[in-house]
Image (tube, rainbow, N blue to C red; front, side, top):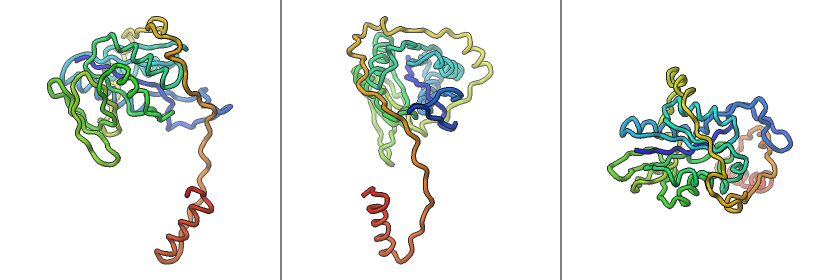
Length: 255
């Protein structure tokens, strides 16, 4: 089975984020595999161990992304493709067009990606890739099985669970709870350091510049407002309900 994992490197959300001129200051920031993509890498490796095959990681990003690629290889991925080209560093449209162009001429039975990236949270790229490739997709998957020529997936449906089947090839997005990602072993780290990483330029993909042009841009990133102290509402249930509505309308202005 040929499994492709679409992966992104993001900043570690556990670390302190510093903003400078409306953007995240990268100096001193630790970058990691996007946590949802880490579930995707782990699931691909588990399926390879059970079914056999090859796991290929595909990613777009600057030179620093190689650290995340090496981590995925150390976990057990077999191959990696890195589009280290500024022409690919656009928005969700740009990245999905580039990823689809990298994948389309390669053999694959299954594509796994994270449900969303923790830095922008758009949840668009994987679904766009599926549409561009013309394959079905199943999102927010919390359990995945291969049954002959199809996948059987359980997906998170706003607090409930849906069971969905789809024929191979298919793209699925990994949700929290799908698995518990492994830590790379020392042997895995040593092997990963020797594995080649294929570098691809946008010019090699035959993409029209207009097709991958950025459709949106981030104007500014701001930190959320500091939380104020909580308040206990007094009185019976009716009085507390009235006070809560008044607070939401007049003070918080969310109603």
